[in-house]
Image (cartoon, rainbow, N blue to C red; front, top):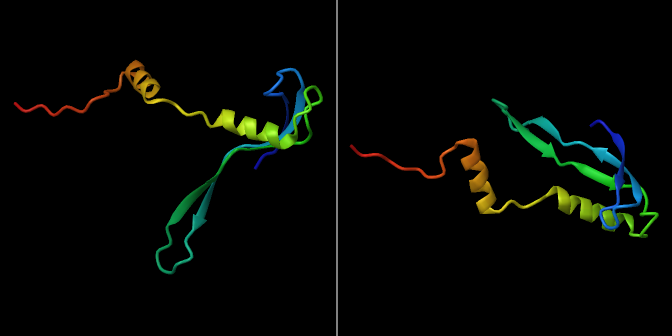
Length: 100
């Protein structure tokens, strides 16, 4: 995993600069432990952002900042937004069987 040091704005006050260590997402290929034909299976490691200090401006702790950054990265998309994106991309949103 390639390690990056990034400086981000505080998600709470938007003014304080926080130094973080960022590990990008990685896909690991593993062999099975069983004998005979051994297919590979894939395991992915999620993105990991570890904050190194608390916010100098608002004083929020590193754990609170890390939890907020993780919540922002895992954004739930509503059903209506998915349908809108599919329609804009020109993909069908209904499956219809035509009987002649």
